[in-house]
Image (cartoon, rainbow, N blue to C red; front, side):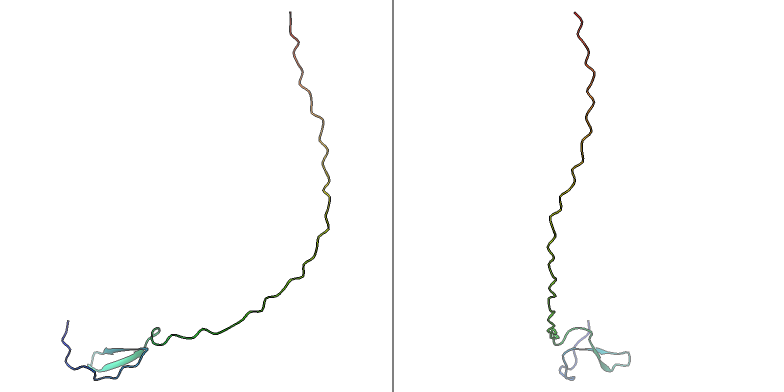
Length: 78
């Protein structure tokens, strides 16, 4: 780590990054984040009401059951 030679030579601005380039110059670059926080835009969305359509009660047709076949029973022998 290097030593700090001079302090407060450059006036710093919020939202900027400062570095020393290859030639020894102090450069500033705008940071993509940081600095002041951006205010959120107030956007209000209107709720769209849908019309409610009442459905009529529909009776379902009941399927008739087929008669079940009876099993043949064995007669007991005496």
